[in-house]
Image 1 (cartoon, rainbow, N blue to C red):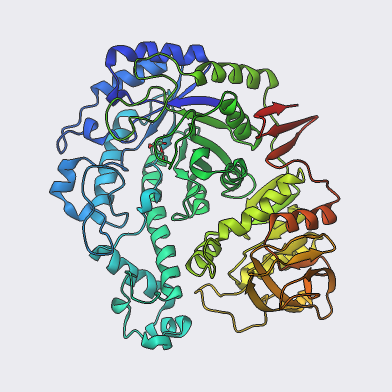
Image 2 (spheres, protein in one colour):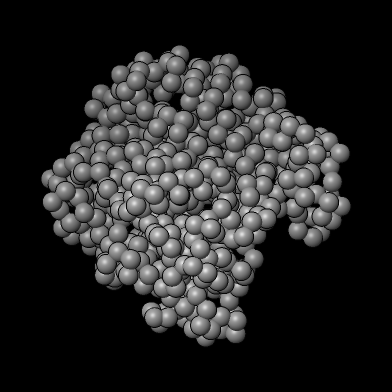
Length: 605
Ligand code: GAL
């Protein structure tokens, strides 16, 4: 794994760059990312570009032997541009324009912004496209973060109407697909389908779903335009990627990764809670564009952040564990955030690899030792998971629009199965149904909310090839427009399953699963077994006692529960694996077996 760091030459004294570069090299780093957010320094006034300072930074870092990742600065437009072309600014649902003073306050649809983005990226390409030290370009920075993917400006409204017309062809088709007779919501034409703003009672779930998809598409288009510009002008060996914050659901990470084949994410484990959530993010990114996607961690937390509720300390040994975790999840590169902390601006209390006076933080030596350790081990063979978790942003949007129970989310439902697999020492690829599922022994599909013919074909194809598929609670319920299916559930697979889901209970009773004796969790799908074999039953619960909890027919399973314990018990049964301690990950890599114990902060092999 290549290791690097993020540096902000626009904010750090010029006479310190040389020392920074040499010290990076001495630490064992070989990549440095610069430039994202630096638009007002690149172009203080329209068309008067100032690149001398950047030339010098590039020269200093490349002379020291570091490979450069250049960020395009479009997550932070300069004030003069917002004043000159206010239509670039994101509009909130209440019609207010976002104000200058932070970042990401732009509309991804705005033609003005798209052309300004192309102009500044063009200027950077004119100067640096052929530079031999530039190994990669990062397009934008965390699109979708800070809830920035959705905008309510007039241009978005028009684009949404056009997007809907392309999707449906006629307004009658839309009215039919969305069932707009409900609460008298019939639309006379596409122009009158307003972008959803807060309503008295809930808004229409099909419209909300369409809006999420539209917003994601707009961001992907925005990124794609820059990616194309760069790809046309740089050599084949130069990477292009966009770093996403994997906890965000606003932008479909698969569509972004597919643009140029390299996925990247920013990893801030303190923002997301448990180590297994970080593992989930890593696996989601690592398989973002299919099982062979390459992936980078573009920003790795290396000390306390400044934006969570508590911002706790980072204990000794933690940065080493985070670094190993990325390496073992198959990442090709990792860059720590950031070389020096900021003395100005919004991130004063955010740590870096140094203090504000330039002295190194505790992470510094730990990183040196970790790099040395990784070097000694040498390149690791790629992960070869037996298990895939079926995931899509459409399912996430559908369940988040209709959680039906406070606190329930697509991510929470998926994490139960994911954590169980990890607990059993199983590695997991997180893929969507365009991937060839037959390459996995087991496919787990909890919260596979949306049923589509393509998806059903992918699953039946995998079943025919001998893969065992375990559908979990809340699967195959709605169609692609987020309307309830008119078929028996699980829609599209109930014949194949030989069983049906007849009800869904947001659970208030202490239900357990027999024979495992573990809790069923907060959600229980009610099953009727038909010809399917009953592998487990619910125990306790007003409506459920003795009824099937897990059924199976010829390799297709349906598990109605929603708890990590029940997933662990079922998967242990199916795979023959034994549960290890929680928050522990096992990785088989060639002849070596690595174990990360996140509670003790150890990595052993
Ligand atoms: C990331 C962002 C960085 C920095 C960092 C702080 O989300 O990409 O620019 O703000 O958070 O943790």
